[in-house]
Length: 116
Length: 488
Image (cartoon, rainbow over all chains, first blue to last red; front, side):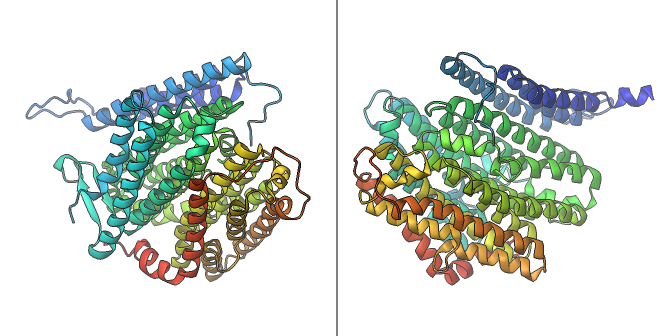
């Protein structure tokens, strides 16, 4: 039981982060918290890829003959994904500032016509 | 066949965006001129590439000379070449037609507007040409980031709509990325063609979860019901110039990405998973056809009405893809091009009505009576095409999807299409009624948009008629080779 949990640790953490991110996004009226939830969700995706690259008893992926290596490709992809995530966070915060300048708050208004 | 044409479709608008953003600060009008030249060049290259592809088969570019599966592959096959040409040509017409819109609404921000448009264009082209699942994610985010910024540049309420769009859009992209993770875990590769060959032997549980996540993510980006909630606010609050560019193109390219993933990745042997995914997409499409059109009928804001109409039209595309027979697929691919034309013309006209006549609501359209004959004529053509009146292209897209549904004897979908078309009659008449059958409103007296707008609208309307009348050639020359299963 405990061994199972330890072996699947990164995947459990992935699920936890994704759910926590979704909860933050949906449950709060504060828009900054929604953006934070989004960032948690993106981080969960990154963690999933990193967990995939792990191999039992393998070494750092630097060219070395004869050693088993962790898979380096997910790391390369996730560097890109992190950059994308930061860019989105930056745009989100810039938009938040404009919302604050326009309406004076970043709480979701009671009579929003933004929805569907 | 190796060629550099595919990657040029991405590089030309991308580099022009960077150059335009820098030069635009120092030289008056430079941003606009660079943008128009780059869009024209992209359109030219895409048409050239389309005919090359139809003549000699798919064109491949191996980035940095690394062949797949190690390197990222960029390719144009008949389907992506057709979509790229549609997007590039409509994009060029719309940007040229919306010069006045952007000047009126974003007077001091044109230096940012044009590079953003080009960045969005490069992202859309990237989505179209990529042959790599992770690269698709990156290109989606390139396009989306530019789109968020463009929406936020609008007037009152635009930042809030943009944030909504950003949160839902990024959530969709993250879902897609997670799906890619599961597929990568199951197959160990990201190249679409290679994934397709390996899926049959992979762990089907991983494939199923990955497939659902990827389809969910792409459905969010294409505004497929019930993931359409970002669309009406985003397209009605965005600057009209940006809305006229985004509404015809962004959801269409995402629909293409969905078709690409469904038929070029999952169709390769993972039969059980594929059937389930197709069924989900077909039902979501049917729901979108009905609810999108009905909700469109209930709107008062003109551009919200058009956005909901897009939800319905994208439903037709999804339904055609979900039915997955050759007839319905023909309709789905054709309708991607149709909706690009119709929404391009209608959003351009709606933007002109807002800027020159102050029209926001459908009822205020009476102000255009007698003042804007050309625009009104184009609105009539586009409206009839939306309903699906025979000689116009909108009819044939729906017709093929409908025939496909009848072939499969899926009567629920036939009914959904019929109800959707009836509701479309309703909302199109709501636009036409104030234009033709009401006493002219006493709004600000104004004239029709400038010649560039009129030419752009008339060109789009002419294309609707040409694609409709020359429908048989369109299908045999361009769409038949693009159908899945026929790709070399």
